Length: 161
Image (cartoon, rainbow, N blue to C red; front, side, top):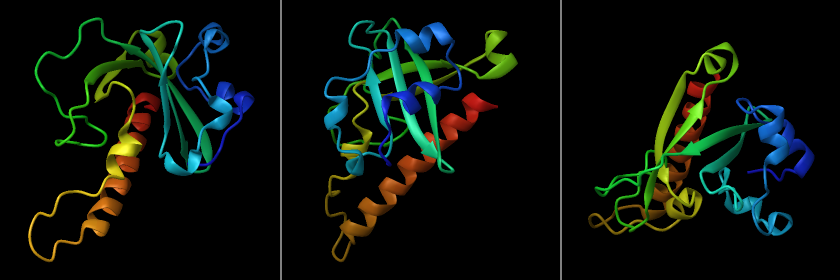
């Protein structure tokens, strides 16, 4: 992911009101984030824990999504829709995003089950276990990174449409 400054980050949101953007609290250590290791920037608002934000570069444009965390946690072990991790014991949470534009003003939303702490970028970079002799673990990792980027972009597309 390319680096982003606070001003560009606040201007990137598709589905947030001006008030929601002005109330946004940046993640702890924002100035020290290593964007090279991220496919998207996702965080829970430290002062309003039901609010979360995702910012991703799509077609060289920073695109932000305002999310609301579901009140209830997922009870059964669920798989993250973005990183599709099945080996780590990460909590998965349902997040809901208001659609952009007239559909969002009408109340239309789209939901996603994703890692509660938005650790997908880290998860896909872990070498997968050896599935069989000759299995190319490096290639598998690269494919997981590409799939994560595709899944996040598809979610942004669903919010945008």
